[in-house]
Every structure is written in structure tokens, then in C-alpha cells.
Length: 507
Image 1 (spheres, rainbow, N blue to C red):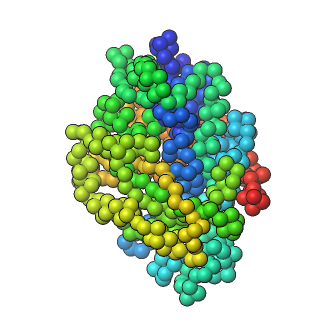
Image 2 (image 1 turned 135 degrees about the horizontal axis):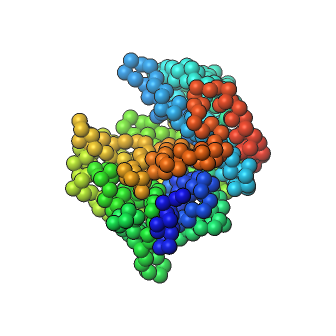
């Protein structure tokens, strides 16, 4: 049935590059849909999910748009645009359905290892910001996905929701917050590793760690020849396959350029680094149980929205604040400072220069963030936790993100702050570029990839039935069906969070 019958003697049906949440999700979907597929996964590091998907490199918010204010921009007429928030919220529900299916079918045995119930909150201060948050709340109330959201300007209520944020705050400061009880904290590193552990036990799946993909070329018969180097033994091999997915985070752009497909021409990358302040005082960590998001500073990239964030990582409760943005020419946390200059080519130099000129304020902002002193970081923290002391916090390096730069007929090139799937016309190769919301919407992203690259198979009765079994809302709009949405939310909550709901509070 699969095209791979042509090359099955010389290589796997599918090659996945990068052992993060995207490859883990796609590999699991494909093996559920077509168990006889052979898959090989190549990862340059010595373990899965050690880059963007790692818990310390990823915000860990189940990005459901409950609290992220950058998904609900205010328009010039003063109204709040909620379209992106609604779309992300619906996609996160799709992810939850797939994860619940995995748990019910013992593909993942312990949901508590990767998902916890944590309230999501947005917090603002000042007359103008309070007015914005109220408008946002009213706009979101028109959509049933956000019906259970609460809004308050009452300081006693806010004190109950987030004591650290309110303790020591100026009593005359005008403040407001929204509260969504059904928020989650997701450890995408743990989830990725659980999926790879499952895949590795299946026939026809092999994971190669410490392997660099150095080059790729399309053969005359339509297959792909992938040049791979073992970083330990220095041995080089050529792997032949019918389908390649490049899910290597910041490393995807250079590999897409090596593929030389017409659809990949003109794309560039703008790297953004980050840092966290991590609380080291257990007494303070115990006083906060929420993900409290604020508004990004003027000129800040969307992934730098500040948040005081309860996390559950490897069974331990943690408290982080940040991220503080920064600039590095690396495309990966474990990458090279030459990544950015090496990515520049004749195809993308014009879009990259144009986007750079249009985003000089962003560049200046990132450089200023890099030059911050500890006192500057403490000042930013105290906007969310007025009584913070520097001795209770430790600076940690966060993950590296590469934002997409693409051709634009009007501007020459534009900088995008989302994710972009680039695929060849024949569906033989696809690459994922960009970042947020990324991991939280991985299932929807990979379902769209299947429709592009495996169109004939997606339309078969067998795949359709299986897709609807894995994702009960598949083919239906949760936005247009409130009853279905509520039923599926109840089911996923029961499967994923029934025991985990009390985990953080009992820790």
C-alpha cells in the first residue's frame, strides 16, 4: 500500500530528523495508522527532547490561549482580536484528545509524568492595561472554549488566586486578572521521551542518537538520500527513504536549505535566546500555584511574554520567572555561533535583510536584554512578585528559538512569530520551522502534514476510521459544537488529570 515498496530493501519508509515532540508525534501517528511502516529517527544529541522540547528549555504551558495575551492583540479601534486565541485553544483540545487516547491504550502509562492541572492567569496593572484585559475577557466570553474564565479587579480575590503577586503590592495600584481553573502544565520533554520509548519497542522503528544529518539529495527515482555521520565513531552512511520529516527545531532551516526543494527557497531564520530566573527557596515555591502571564514589553518578541510560572518537572515542583530575551547567532542551544551566517544564501539574503531593517527596534531590545544586570532582572521580577529577593533565585539558560523569515512581495521579507510547515509538491519531504505555540499544537500541525504529504492514505476508509478513533473530534469543529467540546473536555480531563489534579497541591 505504501510507496515504500520501491525502496524497502535499501532503507526505511520514513526518516524523522530530530527527536523532539514533533517527530515523536508524527512517528506515533504514522505507526498507529500504518503499523507495518519502517521508521528511522536521527538525533544529533545523546538523548531525546534535549533541545526545544526539554522542560527547562520550553515554557511548559499547555498553550490553550487562556492566559497568553500576545494571542489577543488590541486593534487600532480599541477592540480585541481573538481569532488566533480561539484557533490555538481548539488545537490544544485536539492534542489533549490524542494524549488521552495514548493513555487509554497504554501507549503512555503515566499521564502524571507529563501533564498537571495548573490554573492559567493573565495579570495586568494600570488603567489602560486593565481596560484591555476587561475587553479581552468580554470578547473571549463570546466563545464557549473560554466560558469558564473568571475576571476580577477585587484585590481580595486576586490575593486568593496569586498571593505572591499581591503581597507587598501598592494598594493604590489598579490591577486586574483573569483566572482559568482548567489550565495545564505540560512537560513536553517527558511526553516526547515516553512516545519514543513506545516507538522503540515497535517492530520497524530505530532511533539513532549522536547522529548528524549532514546532507540530503533527491534521487532520480524520487526517493531521498540522507547523508548521516555518527558523532562518536565518525562513521558516515547514506540512508535511502521515501519520506523525510525535518523536525529539528532551530536546526530545521539549514537542513531545509540542503534539500534544495523549490518550496524552501527564500526562507531565513532570526534566532532568539532566553534566560529564566529559577526559584531556589522551597517555601516560596510552595506559595504559588498558577501560571501568571503579563503583557510583553514594547518591542519584545511574543515568546518573551513575562510569566511567574509553577512547573512540575520530573516529579518536583518548581517556580520560574521570565523568560528574559536575548540574542545569539546560534540556531540551537547546543549549536554553533556560525549557524546564522551559514544560513544566509542568495535565495534568502534579500528577505533577511528586509526583515532585519524592519525589525531594528527588536534587535536593539534583544541586545539590551543581553546586557541586563542582575538588578535589572530583579526589578522585572518584582513587577510580578514585589517582595522578591535575589538570593532566592538562580539564573538559568533557556532554549533557543529561530523565528521564520519569509519572502513578502511588499516588504521583501517579513519576520513571523508562529510555526510554518514547508513541504515539497510531491509530499516526499516536509520541514517544520518557527516556534510558539509549537509543542502544544503539535498534533494539529502533524495532522495537517499528513493531509499534505500522505493525502491518498488520509482519504482511505481505514485511515479515516483510525484518525477518528485517536481524535474523536477529527473532521468536526469544536468551535461550532459546544456540546461535543464539553463532552471531550470531560473525557480528556478524566483520563489525563483525574489523579494529577491534586498532585501539585499535595507536593
